[in-house]
Image 1 (cartoon, chains in turn yellow, cyan):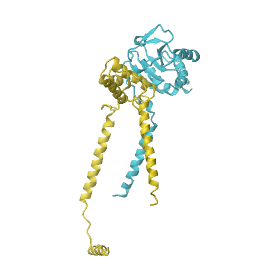
Image 2 (cartoon, each protein chain N blue to C red):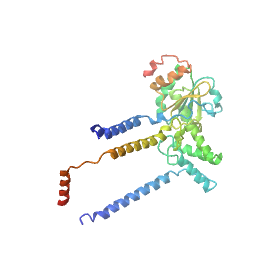
Image 3 (cartoon, rainbow over the protein chains, first blue to last red):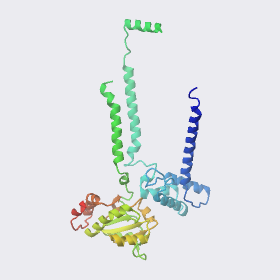
Image 4 (cartoon, each protein chain N blue to C red):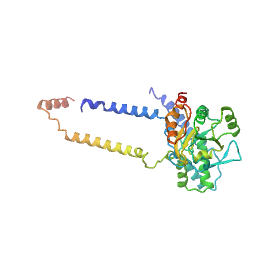
Length: 164
Length: 189
């Protein structure tokens, strides 16, 4: 009974929190769409938006081109637009263009290479290690012989069960 | 289980801390490798800042080692490296090319007049398109090219006396750039 009046309050706080969170996401999304470029049709516009989501901003380390306010991200968005609309590049050609200049860093999905092998192999290695440890623990548990109880122990256990 | 194995979680914890310590103390900006390293400098045609009627192309940079420095008047770090660039210009025979990146030409001209002009050529890249060709993502950035026009070194960040002694001077000597004066003496500045 005592904590009953608190519950609507907690719900209210949770509601406000959810609202703020939603608002934050909407605002962040609105902010990322500041450049206005003309497109022939909606498919082209969707393709452009997909492309700028796909590449990482070289300056800001953890944001894509779409989400960054950095001047270089703005320049690269303009470059992507120019390559797509004016030059008629394919997605692969645009990706290659940016990679030739900014390296694998602009890709969120880096190719397997001499520099990136450990990113790809570490999780697999850790998985194998975890399986090996698990197998060893299971093997050890299986090998363990069951505990031999003496007659007195059996008697005490029976007495305890009885008592309950 | 032996008593020693109780310390395994602590060991894992300490190694995670160590990894974090090393990871966060790395300068991420320095680590970003240039896609141009060991590749030919891209072909370009840019307007000279000092003589707007003159076009400068890659052909102007061939035949001798070149230091290409990307700078701008809006960049405070460029101001702090300017003195070192002036020293390099005075003490070596390397060809120095400045790229005035996303800048206002009048301000750039004023800057060169006020602080001195270490460059043999200054290229006007006010819209940053040459910068994109070079994979520039900030200023200052500096490239060292050999006589064949290949990028042998790239630095993101300022050229200071430490970089000069440890990274540029050995490469200058490898490229047989004549270094006059007391280059070691100018290093502790």
